[in-house]
Amino acid sequence: SSRTDASAPVRFPAGFMWGAATASYQIEGAVTEDGRTPSIWDTFSHTPGKVLDGDTGDVAVDHYHRWRDDVRLMADLGLTAYRFSVAWPRVQPTGRGPAVQRGLDFYRRLVDELLTHGITPMATLYHWDLPQELESAGGWPERDTAHRFAEYAALVGGALGDRVHNWVTLNEPWCSAFLGYGSGVHAPGRTDPVAALRAAHHLNLGHGLAVRALRETVPARANIGISLNPSVVRPLTEDPADLDARRRIDALANRVFTGPLLGGAYPEDLLADTAGVTDWSFVRDGDTATAHQPLDFIGINYYTPAVVSAPRDGGTGPRLDGHGASDHSPWPGSERVAFHHAPGELTAMNWPVDPTGLTDLLLDYTAQAPGVPLYVTENGAAFEDTVDAEGRVHDPDRIRYLHAHLAAVHDAVARGADVRGYFLWSLLDNFEWAYGYSKRFGAVYVDYETQARIPKSSAAWYSGVARTGELPG
Ligand code: PNW
Image 1 (cartoon, rainbow, N blue to C red):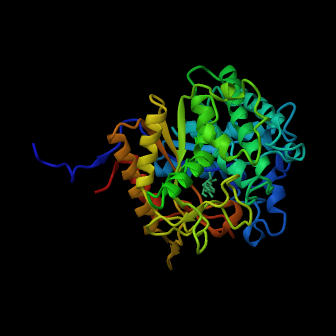
Image 2: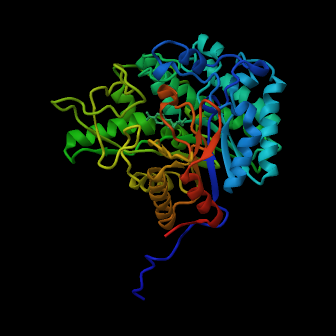
Image 3: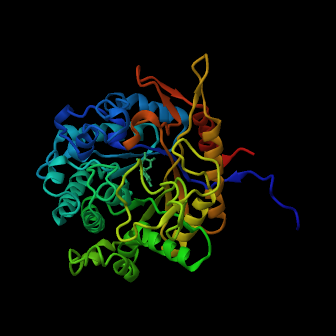
């Protein structure tokens, strides 16, 4: 019939996971408790000039002491899943040697509380808090860090594998490598293009070694994956020079990871584009095969697309290629590519809102990795929320953002993408890296004076979606 179903509810598949995501350094605080030692983010945030207003994660939102209340909050919202990260320096303070039991116990209690409330845990092993001692020994640009990471993965897998069945090895290795070692806007703040490429390779290798280590320590039914932040890279025009800029950024943002992870090799064009930077001699025989482990799922983190062109007179356009400002490029060998604003409303991060990028990504990964389930492991936005006289927090912009992006996920599902769940970034307002506490991504507002949690109007809205499994009309 010609009847359209435009008014039919937008329903998600049964069993779809409705979650929220956080990361250890952004929420925990308690940075010297129970044997934890500094990570690169402690060092970086305590270095003057690195984080806006000198903010640090010393206290953050005190989740290390408020975890029980925070789990209750999730349960009250009707969430069915929670993605958190494990702080490596709590588990293995020097990055080597035996595990610290008190560090592991924190996560064990957290997971048990989640399970008591019927919330499925998804644990990320590395969300950027490298033990400082490992950075002092060279960090991700050094091969040994990949081996240390696999050893740490086995410790955590051995301690939590009986109750955690969903594992993410790395969160956004692009940020670790190219913001951490290239533009220097993230910890450890190094600005060396060779180090950035070496870091990318050792993250790929570390991922592969960690997948192997987890498969040996956790039950076979476990789901093991990685969370990437693929760039949706669009050319400003169809001009061949702009298409070449697109190809270059796609190689450095996306294929430097998906090449080895999904295909077992670095792309030839990436090696050619970066030939003036490095000969890649740090890649040893067998490394890319090690990185190429079967994955049970791929996690997609999406916020905004990128628009690029060949170098243009009149400036390179707004910098949309990294958190914060830097004179150093995160694009080794392609420093002169110009970045432009995509059309669309801007969030408080100045990131254009474009939900079609998320549909495109999910369909692109469906084609690239046929048969591999996908999760949206992060999606969300910072906005200027308003607190009214009664202390209620209204965030209609966030509701619109979430609604549009969930509709985009549904679109991809309707067109064949196997998406199993969605994790809103973030459960709580928190330490937004180089922006400190100035940008609020939470569905739950946090009063940083009192640590009071106040669900925003978006939390109530998302709760309705999680409970019904469909988007309101
Ligand atoms: C992600 N970029 O970070 C992280 O996984 C979260 O911890 C973070 O809070 C969230 O997105 C919001 O920023 C990103 O510059 C940081 O392209 C920087 C970029 C992308 C993602």
